[in-house]
Image: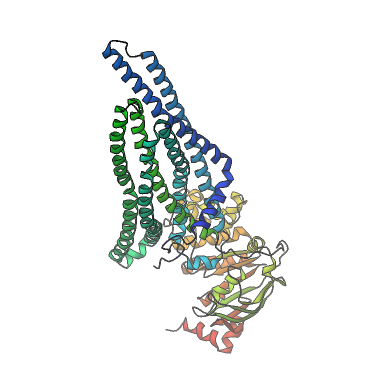
Length: 596
């Protein structure tokens, strides 16, 4: 259960490069982003102006009270009413602008995440089979879900907050200077203190945010394995061992999440402390200035409000830096996946007139270059022939057909289809030539009809049913609840293994391929069903080039040619009776299946 992949990094290796890639994708919506920034700036400016206007109302009330006490006048409520109406309008406009910018950025973040998920989905179909051999399924799922969700959520909040925080700091400082320059400078002294605090916390928390994404992927992988393999876990009484392993992964996630959130959470109380300290200084110095007549009471109130607000955007910037760290860590994982090398598709030939002649010429291949398993494979198959490939486990039988379908690239040699190298065919054209029935069946959550139609998406219901009849699957399908409209569950556990195999064979028949590949296709069915499938497959294989991989040699007696493989090479070739007469490797394998 190794969990090492793109997620196994301790920190973002290329912060700047990843940020540029993300900005490049977001720049597609630059007009919307500019509009959002304009509304964010507008909302912030109107919010900044409000405290000074509110201070004017306080000054008006204070002066009116003084006049009333002295008997020379009173409070001008009409002026206060006008100030409050102006203040209310500013608050409404600020709230409206904030709502509009939030709506725009939500749209941008949703579109970006939609685009990224689409790119990831398309990428999955372009990756070579070798990638999936080495990569953990749960980690890929985590990239599609957790990492893209992290990008979406943080992009939505961090971009406009960054702009509004910067505008707020600049705007508040200007407004404070318009009231009293000395007090403004005293308030501004909080910036270097706050900056040092932010830098220390960001430096400490960065690695924990990246680790949080890494361990989240590991937990997802663990859960995916537990769900998909729950029957095996129960069969081997491994529940306790699985729980212990999950607890270890979950504990790592907890610790990384706790440390990252704890450190980022320190910013607000620390900034509040700095802000309260600044507040006390402003209150004392402001009172002295008011006594000396250098500043009005209303302006002191406005200034105190500004000083309280001055530390908030600094704390927000610190929080944004944490969000950006998390977003970049997630983005790097997504972009690393999108940058993974794709399969090569330089072919231009179409396969519309392919007959099915296949030739292997000096084929050499290994899943790892330092471990060659197909050493020097040569074989020539004519169109319409039924070819059986037999041999012990690990001889390279399944590998040969995977190479034929170009799931993997050869180390050397070539495979010819109708005399042309398979690399000269466009991949989509080459794939349309084949249909493959594997030992491990694959069906998806959906109706039986939809599962069968997967072989030919344009097939009519009648064509689907005819294919099922040919595969001897029609009878059992009709005995099921809802028949062809029965929904297979996510694990397809509501039908038997043999029934699954019959459905995959019917699906291959519906594809109507030029070349049919059966990899232990009858291994999961009983003897009677096997005989029915054999009869059906004889009909299907008629006129088609067919490759049959089988361990039960009794099923391939009527093959036109049998290729006997051992350790990556063909050791014998011929028909069933001929190979038995030779009393060689094939005869030894065949007779071993009938020994008492």
